[in-house]
Image 1: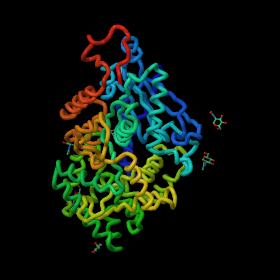
Image 2: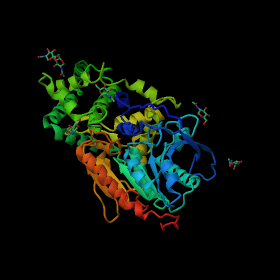
Image 3: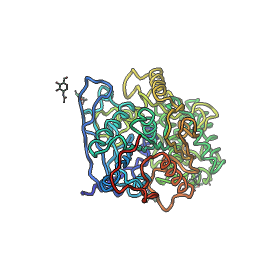
Length: 496
Ligand SMILES: *[C@@H]1O[C@H](CO)[C@@H](O)[C@H](O)[C@H]1NC(C)=O
Ligand SMILES: *[C@@H]1O[C@H](CO)[C@@H](O)[C@H](O)[C@H]1NC(C)=O
Ligand SMILES: *[C@@H]1O[C@H](CO)[C@@H](O)[C@H](O)[C@H]1NC(C)=O
Ligand SMILES: *[C@@H]1O[C@H](CO)[C@@H](O)[C@H](O)[C@H]1NC(C)=O
Ligand SMILES: *[C@@H]1O[C@H](CO)[C@@H](O)[C@H](O)[C@H]1NC(C)=O
Ligand SMILES: *[C@@H]1O[C@H](CO)[C@@H](O)[C@H](O)[C@H]1NC(C)=O
């Protein structure tokens, strides 16, 4: 086996210029020890057009050593699949320290990971023009998973009695929940971590959680951000105020320009939101942010806010809107951060535009949804009006049911601090048979990360609970618990 060269790309501040906080999930650190090669298989281009028989190469990884051994003595070994979202999967599945790997070991599972279409090396079309992006949707991605699973089960000699268990975080968490929802006969169990399963057009709820999470640490810190923002809103009302603010915040572009102004506010929201979303990881933390916000010698909250943004921006604050649009208009796959693809998904299906649009919002009335819809239009064309996007988001919710999730054996995990919980499921529903688990004082998809010695005790405990819930749903033999039950000879398959 060749050792893959792992390049761990963590999207830091660059990412902030796109607003898709969702795009910055941090699963890659699960897999620093990947030692398995990439594989490719022929995936269908369009699952919904029977007359289209075009295919493309989709990338996947697998780890089959445990399975290969155990299948000789027991026929119902499960397939564990990590569903990937809006990023490259440039590593394998032998994720030595990941929660899926630990659970998978107890079942001698066949462990796999599938890259999402249009990301990484999984490229269904030669480029990503608007015409060619029409095959990029969550519906197609779900059918990719099903087609893949069918193919792999055949390839590895699995039958209907080999259950499939899926895992995903963030957008991929929503995919995990949705693939179980739409194909319960093929997917037996799902874990959806920090999954925004309700597609909300004007996603003001995100910043309500940001406010609450900061308040948990320091009320005064939250007040400074809010009061500073109220003053910012005030300054945006006059030309002179905007000029003053441009100086005060050392902005990259003059705030008298509407697009650059909205970009500035979007950047402010993203920057602070990111530290909450990833609290305690990726060098992000609420305490560090609040130290900067409360620690200075400025007396006015707007000056404290300006100081924070300047200190953490390395140069000017905000960004150049038209440069960003130029970047997002590039129609080849060479753009490393792949923001164009996810922006397409937001503009055509997902919404989740993070706003602050009323005076009592956390950042006062500084950023409406118009910024995002205009950006969709500037990048993808005039068809992308607010009405069109709203309608598309509505359709997505109609297709999946939004908050009204209707399937059993899906575990929704949420970090208590995570702003995306505002679009996710937070309570178990025994009647339908799904469960929710809130993990205290952690952020986005933290439960899927590699276990480390710095993990807070409630996270360690939650991981154990997650394991037990999933074990309760998986029918296969748990080799860690009942080794004496393992049949010595091949038995007839269990009934599904
Ligand atoms: C795809 O369909 C076309 C027309 O129906 C046919 O000529 C072609 O052989 C098919 N290709 C494959 C790979 O099945
Ligand atoms: C994009 O790919 C299509 C083929 O799918 C090709 O016809 C078109 O010229 C390409 N456009 C650009 C801008 O590369
Ligand atoms: C802008 O700054 C000048 C100079 O400090 C000050 O006199 C003026 O009141 C400010 N204007 C606004 C709208 O804040
Ligand atoms: C955030 O993470 C830090 C560790 O970096 C931790 O001390 C703190 O309790 C966490 N929660 C909040 C609300 O700050
Ligand atoms: C976190 O901060 C430390 C010390 O400032 C630095 O060495 C490290 O590279 C940073 N890590 C990330 C992921 O930014
Ligand atoms: C505030 O602190 C900075 C250095 O941290 C110093 O340069 C500045 O003079 C101080 N301002 C006041 C008003 O004390």
